[in-house]
Image (cartoon, rainbow, N blue to C red; front, side):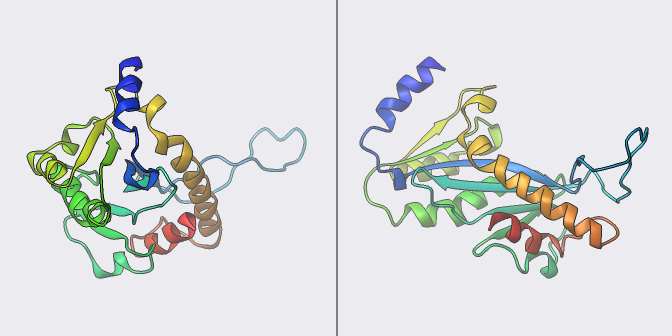
Length: 208
């Protein structure tokens, strides 16, 4: 980690905050989690009955060091992508699907080409991309594009993202707190689990 910060100091020197992008992927679950409630003193069992599942939707977010949020990239667990699953989400969001519901090499390259490169292409000078050290994030296509457009690709050291990944604490923690509140509110009024057609609208509310 000391070596990483030493290298980062020289890598980031004289690079504008708008030219530094941190990306990370996470997932939003269908479970709003446990809640604190008011109940009669001495109650031995206090329960809230609501439907939930272990399903989740994968999200890739990218944020500049100046605080600008790039459009999200959403991955559903599905074989085909329905038109009703892409309506009402945050502006500029791109939607995709994989059988596993997680990012793989092709979807990461698609995110890189459709969201990251259009942002970086408009900037002069050196640019820096900071992200997790995952095999699916490193490909010849991505590395060749970074070389072509003067992008320095900085990978976080293995097994250190819980300490070094800026997005985890700075963005994902408050986003998931907002998501859980919105999800609980939805489940109080509706039965069943979140439909994919409902997800974009609720996700947009959480982002806002």
